[in-house]
Image (cartoon, rainbow, N blue to C red):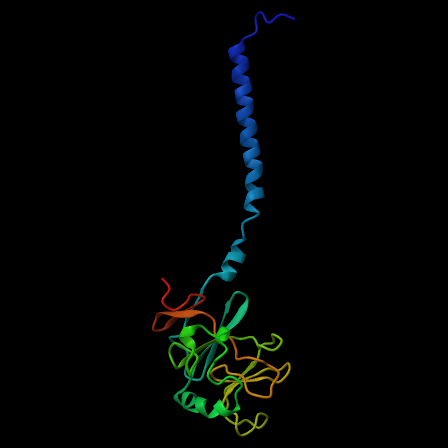
Length: 198
């Protein structure tokens, strides 16, 4: 077979063009594959900080927001609630919040909060993960005359005061968890971002 009459420049062009088209095709096929390795927008949002507007939260009221798939409780404690907190100390497992993993360092105080009137907690019992019921009433019949408000876990009876501190003699081993949070403004809390973060 003779190579006479073969246009080598045309052959080179067709070979190069075929290679480029093949490379583009391989690249296009890889984009969805590589993109599938990135977390979904929903997964990214699940770990993102969440904002809460507490400007209209009445004294004694609780609001719930969701962060990382968990309920976050924000309570506007009344002056009476704050005055009553020390009365619970003798009946609590960890009244001084010594278990450091249960709250950020800036919330290790008698109120377990940045601002004393606003409490921020993860609304999951530290026993087996149930969600306790908010019971702000003082001395209801079913909880006794010493009850000064807090949470009662319906699953196994664990009790927590209005600082999220666990009572002695209940199944829950530790206080409710205070998530990382900060004040963006006086009436705006960002859960999932530490105090002082940019």
